[in-house]
Length: 295
Image (tube, rainbow, N blue to C red):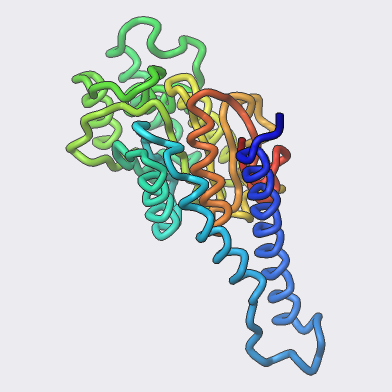
């Protein structure tokens, strides 16, 4: 039997898809006008983008209804890569709260972690930390960036259904990663979260950058119950998120592109909620599984 909820979520899914399309189309139209490809008489005059404004306005209006209770009593660890937009990160944190969830802490990775030239330092620190962990807690076959990603994951996340207390070993790992200038983390972290939201930043280095991101995501996926990797519209398609979707780890984590739009941020939080009980899924502006996970 088709329920009202089914009708509602299906309708909203259509509108979200339209919202993303309108925002993207409006942006392309604006670029064409700016470059002189549109009506010559209009070139040089400021161009309003009512379609894009409507798309963002619509997504913002439906977000409270869509997100209400989706993350009730759920905890999320927020991990950001260098160059992540602070306004977007703040907006995502607020939407996690609007969905009834809580962010245990934000962990900001540094250029030292993501720069291929620093691999030797990352490998040395990761190897040292691995010897301090219980046997079997980190995969023996893990590569440099898988290993350090898993160490971070063990320190900030859990595979349990609910958040767990941060123990001494987890605190020691965070302190060591911070001491090695691989990340910054608040001192008052008290919980490890079952869900991890990784927010992308600047495009990775042309040589070795994708492997660093893939290793990080692989490590986090082993340590957390659910992981969502989110990036901008430009990160989809042939961008860093689009390339990550071709990595085997994409079957274990959800991906969303479009966090530079209100629709994309709403889709991201919906994906975080879904990740508690389901792996994989490509959502957002260029996601093969649709604009957003609804149902």
